[in-house]
Image 1 (cartoon, rainbow, N blue to C red):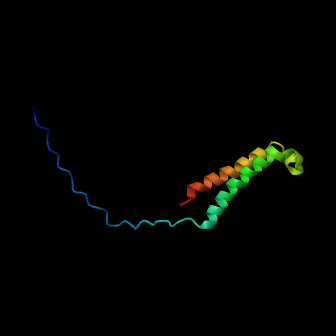
Image 2 (cartoon, rainbow, N blue to C red):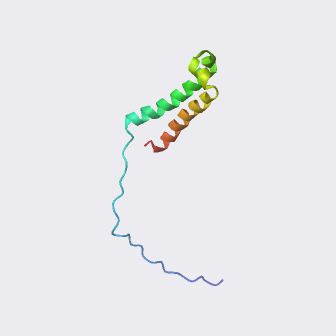
Image 3 (cartoon, rainbow, N blue to C red):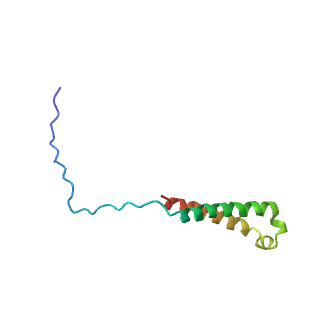
Length: 85
């Protein structure tokens, strides 16, 4: 069986003009509290809407906008998790 040709690889040299990579530190505790708070408030909004929404005046006036408010708060909290370190 014929032998394959041997290819010489060029020697790797690292670039010398690279700046050091900044490593981000941990997230501030207030950020975590706000993130979890938004998700819990959104969940609470939906629960209150289902249980007692018809007897609360401003929730009755909002109608089906209550779902948008509750889910928007939850989604904002979930989007904040992407920046959490």
